[in-house]
Length: 291
Image 1 (tube, rainbow, N blue to C red):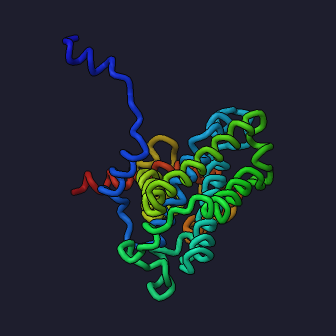
Image 2 (cartoon, helix red, strand yellow; image 1 turned 60 degrees about the vertical axis):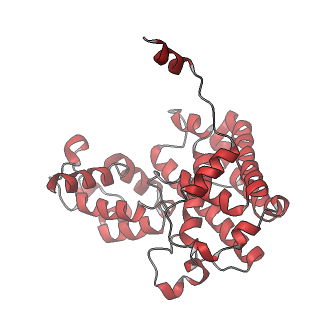
């Protein structure tokens, strides 16, 4: 190895500062068309950092954990819904801005979007707001309590699911929400929301930018038992599909509403039998091969 390569190999990773993160995201903002879409993605990013990428992953990896893959999908969606509703309530209470409910952007008529249709260039209040105490009192504090003390879709509490890792998870959530307040105080609410929205860019979650396309991709592969997607796991038996999974239109409708609306059996089938996390990649690859 030459000296240049050795120097590069020995250089430790240096995490960007808050200032550097903010400069980057303001130069390359998230690709959203309006305020509702920004809040959708910001909710995903907040959940990714504060909830999903946390000690909860160690809980999920434990074979004895109730958080199976299907339950994680339901739990992530339920947490995203909780955060998105908190953002919606905060914008109404503090800015008198009425953003439509979660998942409305991209699925409803323009007339129903209301203030959610506001272009981000029209949202100067995002730059002007930097009151971290008000943000904490009005949204982040109640959100922390809700995230850590609620009952999950499976019927057990967060404490019961996290077990001995609950205190570590509790601290992790608090620290991530505190960071959001710190960014808001130092750089404004726009920068804080932009950072969280950018974090959601590659996540194929409910409210993510690819979710509706993913649901359509599920339609494609389930309509074709010979689709390449089934080479690994095999096409699921039509007679063994739980609940609404036996009716593709019903399944797509509930997935658009959010996978936390699935039953435990339906969610497990979508993840384990169908491989919902991989269908979009396969459909996109097939489309690219045909071009």
